[in-house]
Length: 210
Image 1 (cartoon, rainbow, N blue to C red):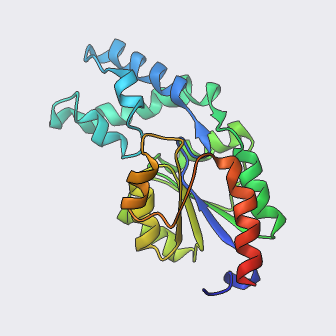
Image 2 (cartoon, helix red, strand yellow; image 1 turned 120 degrees about the horizontal axis):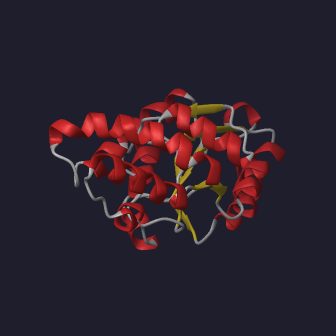
Image 3 (cartoon, rainbow, N blue to C red; image 1 turned 90 degrees about the vertical axis):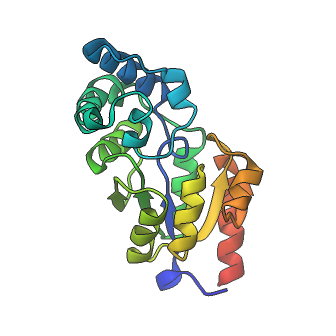
């Protein structure tokens, strides 16, 4: 097992349901979109399958030709309805702080747009060295490889796929829609029940690699 990059870990995190709990705001944003367009979206169902790009979810509710405009409007509404009520996931700050204690770098890679991802992080008080948005599954892997990420932490199958394709150790957390078994099948090297288990795991892995 190689040592960390530059003697310190570069750790990537997914955003929604890994570091960020935006579920209440996403429900409110879908309600606002429904109010404007007249197209009913089952917000609870949509929230239950967070992870893929927004356009993938909207395709369940809007005709294909209307999806780009609906996505653009959703993002405008998200800034109003979701950012102000965004919350960190339990132990999210502790997970990031653990990376900082090892003099490591934090890279957030998410399907959310880069601007909304950065605004969300600002709202919940988490600072990342790099934020890469509008990426999912294999395209996350491209960003992870570009930033030489050692470990990628996420809650979705797409995160595990991205980690494997990006050459990062894949750490799954069962805080989102995917079970431990699903994450393992998708390529997780490690599965944690909650993000609070990440700091001691990272410390142990760092000790082992040095």
